[in-house]
Image (cartoon, rainbow, N blue to C red; front, side, top):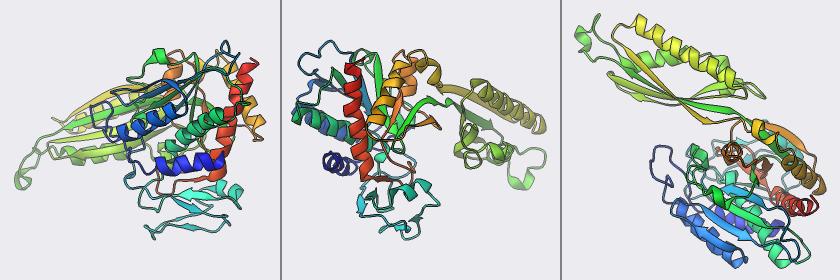
Length: 409
């Protein structure tokens, strides 16, 4: 299965699918449709039924149950088509580093960076394995084309080996997960009661808790006056915005937090003297902690308006997704089955809370509990993104066993 998953993965990452959070179209970028078209065609070749690649970029397919297992509970397997706009995903050139020996990995197209065990301590567990990276001028795209490749390789195994039994399986590949819109146009009716995303990190990882997530759009409105005659008149919006953002606690930034610590993250700042705009994301596992952060931003805005008469600070908050745990813990069997499957694949179960979110966050909120199973990559959204080829095999094995344990549920 490793070769099957690897071959697919190496093909998929070379298809440009970067999403765009500034786009109002669905999908946010038309290039995502190219991979969707490929996947729909391949699902049909693998004997899936009712395969649809819709106008919004979603791909759906139904895998009929093995003979005699039609009454087994249906499960869904989900991965996302897009890659993060944080780093270029165009013209990805995957490289396989054979028999990794623990030394720094160099990048052919970017000699200024190296991948080391200090960057990614998990690499110490991958000595002797083959590691896939990009050439360093792009991200790799393991987030989440590894998940796609693993699902497709498993479908190929189910077609090839009749002794691998399974109940009904629904496959769904989503666009725009990286920009928070992976379920915005999803056909909920195509999905079963229980689903799994393959979008996690290291082998053995299982996640059913994620951040409570908010976005803050902050607009600073000032007044332009010739700088030679500006005393007591000029209201420099972008300068004030910079000072305002500097008053956000530095210890609550992503680079200074870990584990269950929340943060503010400035993702954009632009503007002129008359108007400046900033976008922050706000994250914590507890919604009440995020409410405290939002109240701080509001009060800070009021303070800056007081200190700069005539300045206007307008803040809009958007609740992006909720902590999935509150929804999943009401249906613990969906997690228990995944645990059994991971153990059957010979892996240690690693329960992590996601320092982020997945399509599973929204789906769980919609009433379809959806934990997140590892896909195997590390340092996502980075030129140093990497994955061991063994992870592609092991995730596929987990899916084989997952179907088996649901038979006996």
